[in-house]
Image (tube, rainbow, N blue to C red; front, side, top):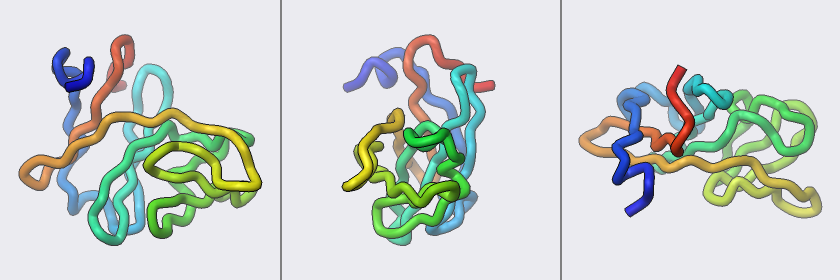
Length: 115
């Protein structure tokens, strides 16, 4: 059980169907935007909405498999780890996510609040 779960720092993003397949939804937080992604097979991931290369908005990128391509310079980021795939190097922040009863919840770390 994570600190987020024990502290109750979960916010409801909305319904799973509110996020298009192979698309995303942006959640504003006190530390910046978080992109919540939905894959073609309904897996859900949450990353900081900025590419580790030049800060491009990952939420506007093209989603495929379990990866997103940054719309600015085509860096490919793994949704599960937040790491850029080779030959690029870098990492963006990941966030806890869960789906219960068709609703999506984002876990916010201590000190981060939904805006």
